[in-house]
Length: 382
Image (cartoon, rainbow, N blue to C red; front, side):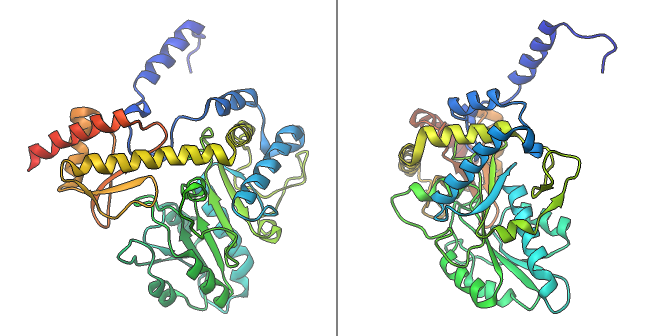
């Protein structure tokens, strides 16, 4: 910190200079986030000082959070679900597994508690394992890049406290057979957490129906991120539990606040994100989100058609607006796209390919330019 204060104009200049070094989403095809809706930005600024860590001071914002929880619970077929707004999928996943541990590990016979997750699970579950000292057992994937049901069953033992299913995997946008996993969870009297951080605001609005939420009796918790396809501001995540009892296991006393207890992982929480999520969800409604998802899917299919013209094809048929491409030397292609044309794409690991996410900021014109540049890169390495 400087001894003397900067002039306001100098600070603004420094901020603008730093911002100019950030990429805009106009060249980004790798991110599951996008530009937030303008009403979300407006609401975020209006509630910028609201701290949900001591929501007794901000009852109006707290009431908005309760409405958000009820609305998303309704979207996921359980309007009575309990939960709260998190910073995103990582926090939601940590808290969901923490609830499993607190509820079931004491009832297990002996040994270290474990959870069974798909090999496609987000890396946040490796953090979960480290933080909570829980063994992480990774089940293999089948040919469709969904978790193998047989592999899951083989990994369950007397110390298994829960299963994890993915509804919109980060690499491939694939959805596990959650209906079958629900049955397995019920048969073994264990929890089933669904990581729908990305897919939660996509799957309900696709033409094809996918069973992944509280409609399935074995599902006990769900993570969903409004700051992704929900078009809210960052950080906006939501964790929902089927029963308030699961949330209660996360209780901590807070004697010096205006409220006596917290159930959250973080203390200070953004009321601005609460207001932003409330605003955009109510402005768009289900009809508006159907239009957003439909536009993204139309762009996804357009991308596949353009790619076929240069003999590039997907590793699997996209279920949602996540596309994994079969290209030679995918990592080299990714680096050359970034260096030569400033395109930001990512790669998949198993199987190896180029990964694109077709978010609302991706236009057909943007796709045309990308395909042209991809062809140039591929021509140089063939």
